[in-house]
Image (cartoon, rainbow, N blue to C red; front, side):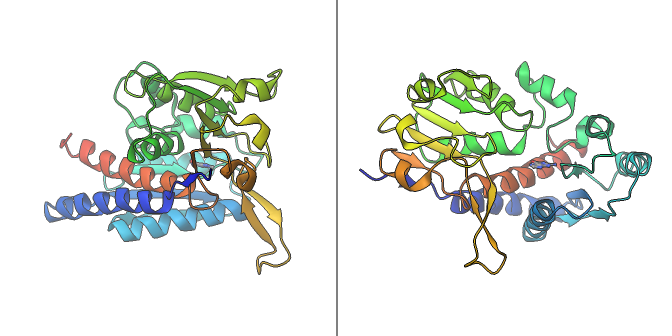
Length: 293
Ligand code: GUN
């Protein structure tokens, strides 16, 4: 058996096309959805993610108010920029690319973003709303995973979903979404403190790998017919590439494709969905701030 490959790029494109249509309708009413992406420093992965977000903004017809600050930026300077953007009614969404340089307190920065403009869904108000099922911005990567499953017609109700990783950005919020009434899966979270992880992952109908390490999930851990979603993005040296590296996920893709029913590739799986859901959140922010939702 060979797994069906989930084409995240194509599904993301359909989400982005829908967003672009709605943006054009809003613009005809004089509303210009606008996102400010703040990047501090030159972390190569972050630079590449931000470039992807800016390209998507342009393609959706949204206004890009991105700011690239030097590594030496102080926390006070960053907080004062956020304050300015919070009060600027022409800016609908604010996203600070993580990780930040070590001298800046990430927590304080996330807390400074107005929850109504927090299109990343990282502010405690949005995290809390997600937890209790109230409306708010859903974090882009976990939301993207749920939309992938939905668009592929993969049954989630009553299924056992094992998530490997407990980050605030992916593992924890995804556990909440997957166990919501709407998605209705039974969820187990595995992490670095988990004993016999292989045995637990083996029980999964849906495995989500979000650990941030190469080969976290191996073929022997995957039940035949399971759905495997790979959130990992790891750079490994590859002298055959111009860049000197290639991207791999957290799962052993080739061997697992032989046993899984569905699998997401890296790149081209979850990654494009993160950006698509960010565009959807920015549109939603513009609609809400203009009294349309
Ligand atoms: N760094 C890695 N993923 C993300 C994300 O989804 N949002 C932000 N702001 N930073 C990230």
